Length: 243
Image 1 (tube, rainbow, N blue to C red):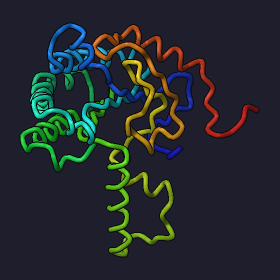
Image 2 (image 1 turned 180 degrees about the vertical axis):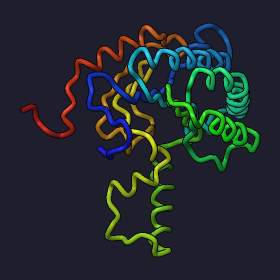
Image 3 (image 1 turned 120 degrees about the horizontal axis):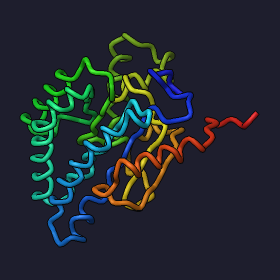
Image 4 (image 1 turned 180 degrees about the horizontal axis):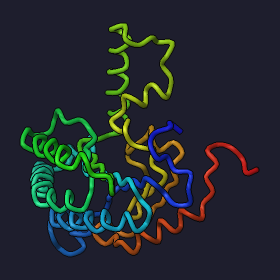
C-alpha cells in the first residue's frame, strides 16, 4: 500500500485496470481485418467509462498499446496510431463534458509528435475534472516503467537531491508514471487469456485479478458490473490473516 489518494478500504473497487484483449480475434471470427476489431474495441471503451460511476469506480486504467506491440505488422501499428488520434479528436469534447479526467502513461518518446500533442491537449482540457479518472496506457510496459523510474531516481541521488539511504518502495513509487493514482484494486483481462502481459507490475502487487472469456468488443457494461459485484465478495488481506 502506498498511501496514494483514495486507496480503497471499501466493499467495491475504487480503481479498476483493464487489459483489453481480443480485438483481433473478434474481427477475424467475423472475417474482417484486425483493425476492424480495434475500432470496435475503441467504441466499447466509452461504454465502460460511462458505467464506472454507477459501479462506484473512480479510477479506470486501460491498456491500449504495449511496448511489445511494436512487433506487430507495420499496417496494424500504423492503423492503431491513426485510431488513437481519431479517438482523442472525436471523444475529447464528450469526455470533458462527462467530467472525465484523462491521463496517459507510458514512454512518449517513440510516439509520433502529432499524437503526443493531442494527448497533451486532452490532459490539459480535462485536468479539472473529477467524476472519473481515465488513464490510458500507450507504449507502456511495466518493466519499462520501473526502469525509467529507477533511472530518474538514480539521477536525483547523483545530483545530491536524494540520499541513497532514503530510497525505499515509497520513494520509487513517486517516480512511476502512476505516482498520482491509487494502486488498482482489481485488474480485469478479457478474451480468456490468463496472464498479466507486463501491465502495472509494481502497482498490482496486491490487486485482485479477474480473467473473463469475453472478447473485449463484446465486454458490456452489464458484464463489467457483474465483475465488480464478484469483487465485493472477495476478502483482501494484503499478506495478513483474518482476525
